[in-house]
Length: 149
Image (cartoon, rainbow, N blue to C red; front, side, top):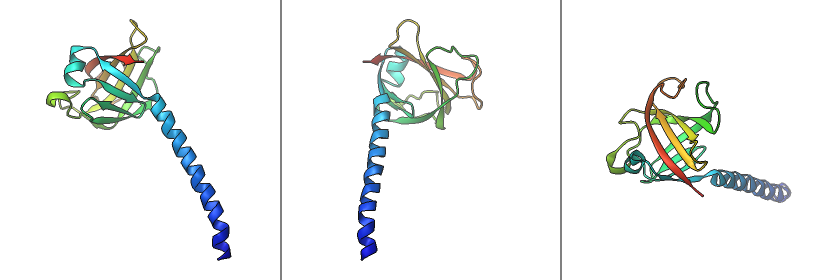
C-alpha cells in the first residue's frame, strides 16, 4: 500500500504533463488552420471551400487528405511556396462526385501565395511517382482560393 500511495502523486503529475503537452500541440495545429474560399470555377465546382493545416486539407464536403510538408524542391518559385506529400496518395471524391485529379492518385500538393495578393492561394496537385522538379512535372490540376482572415 505504501508504494501505491507514493505512485499516485507521480502518476497524477505525469498525466497532467501529458495533458498540457497534448493541449498545447493541439492549439498550435488549430492556430495554423486556414479557411480558404474557392474563387476559381474549378475550385468552386470540385473542392468548394477548404480548411488547410500543415497536416491535412479538409474539403467542403468533409473529405480530408492527409499531407506532410517536404523540403522545397528546386525549380519552384522560392517565395511563399511549400510542397507537401499526400500521405497516403489519394484522390478523394469531392463535390458532385468530382475528384482533384480525375481518379488518378494525388501524390504531391504545392501551395503558393499568388503575386496578386497575399491572401490569394494557388493549390496545385501532382500525380507523379517522384517529387516534382518544376511546376509542369506531373501537374494534374490547379485550384485558386482566397484566404479568409
